[in-house]
Amino acid sequence: MPPHNPNDEHHTTAADEPQRRRAIRRRLPIFFIDMSGRGNDYWVTVSWKPTDPWAVTLSIPHSTSPVDWLLARDLLWSGLNIPTGSGDVRIEPVTARDLDDEDQIEIRLYGRRNARCAHLIVTRRDLWEFLQATKAHFPDARDTARAGIDAEIARLLARPTAAPGEEAT
Image (cartoon, rainbow, N blue to C red; front, side, top):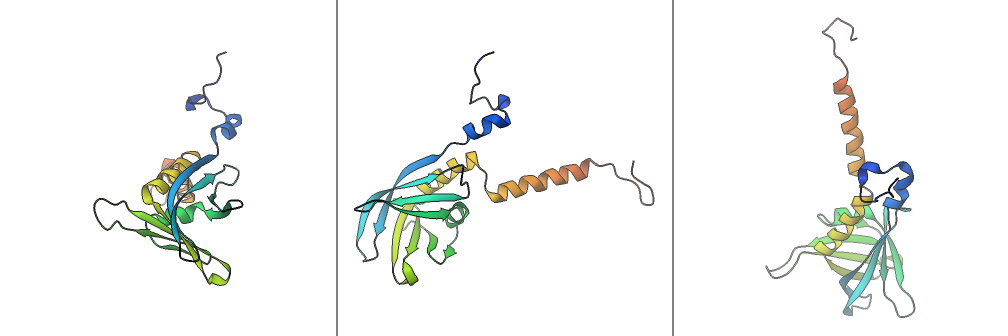
């Protein structure tokens, strides 16, 4: 028997599923404005793990060790198109000012008691590409719910119908 080809989806089994879901890790360029108001270009690491599919970890470089923020993946998806979030994390799309610029996403991370905030500016394209890569391994809740509804509609439509007053067979 030939070895299993992981790219051949027609021959995967439930036992293969954990191997198909791999962690995704990307470095993204950002413009970071710290809580004192100073700004610099940095690289952050965003990562997604199949063991926690609803979350994305954002690792921000710091002098001693990275600072990790755990963000809801659906919050990031929503923030690509509309202002979203409350509390410690708020995300907002920013439209490019001229044709040479790219649309951006502003992620605001609030410290204790919302007194100060760090701003991260990332291109919309970079964040979208990362989130799209996670979706290939784990569809978002709306896709999952939609698939369940579609299956239920198909099941209902497949049932025989009866004329009024008659019993379906």
